[in-house]
Image (cartoon, rainbow, N blue to C red):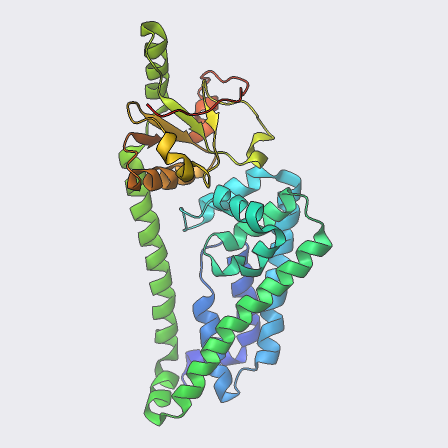
Length: 323
């Protein structure tokens, strides 16, 4: 048996525990290749699922409980930190909050299958005030489904490989390289998606000082100002309920349904609280596909505008009308 494979088999349960724990704490090192490898080796009875499963579940519960209590105590600050750490820039705080709004604690049953949502789900559960006993029940069930899915997928592949002697011999000798290849592939794919997303974002966003000039010019000349849309989730209003001048509140899951009433004769500026304006950029792309072309995310979002000292106002309920 190759030395690397022998080392993995000898310390398999400890490696699984530490690796999954580190990933679930927010470090972007995908553990799916490791789970598949462990499942494959279980076909040789060198690794036993009965021991691997508790190791992974314990890691998930420790990490998720940590984020649950941090989210309960520090709220949005923890969510923004995790969003910055994630390689899945397009999976952001608002997207996760949207899942909780629609599905509640059931979100925890499938959260680990969605990159980015996996780590964010636990602190948002804490922020929403979900009882810990309920969180623990659904989180444990979700971790069990996620772990079993990949361990069993690996086991199935291992059983098939055992029937082909040459294939199994090849896998035994090159298991480390196959694992590293899978890991590198996952990482490169996530980095590529993130980079492509950010490049699209930089090409379309508007600077806060540019938006301020547009608002001041419209006020001086009596013109219609750009339409400003606040995409923040209701939980994000708690620290500061104010909005940009003239902004209307429309959730990111609702704005696409209102595309037909959005004006086409002026700029539409979107802002949220996600780092790098991920939610705003995603909504902007969705609207572009529906023919709303003059739409731009605000660089720095709400906090960038506020920290620059630009004017904010109390929200007044209003509606958007088409031009």
